[in-house]
Image (cartoon, rainbow, N blue to C red):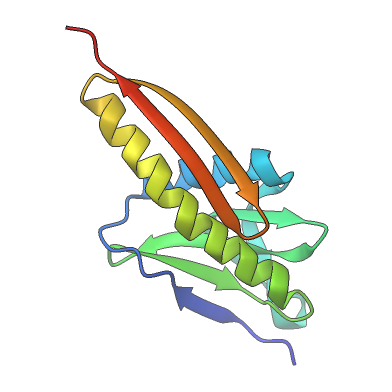
Length: 131
């Protein structure tokens, strides 16, 4: 049965800018399109600040920061596996993007290498700061 699902992703003190950068990075890595509207049951749509859509995720999945937490929004009907994978990837990638932005704000030059293996992300972040 098709219905709307809104789910907190267990990230506290989330930042909207970091979330949008996370979605941009993931879209390029998994070949997804960035969207700002997801489909829910009955052909209705819901506006979201940022989201992902691809062949396996035709209705899309949206993300927003609500009360300091990242929330996913959309309709996983017929695409539950891809929907849950997108939630997992955003959750994992957010931590890396947040760390990179914090290092940059402290004057570090960042070199990063992020790869996706199924529903797991492996990242290497190197920061250099010249005196």
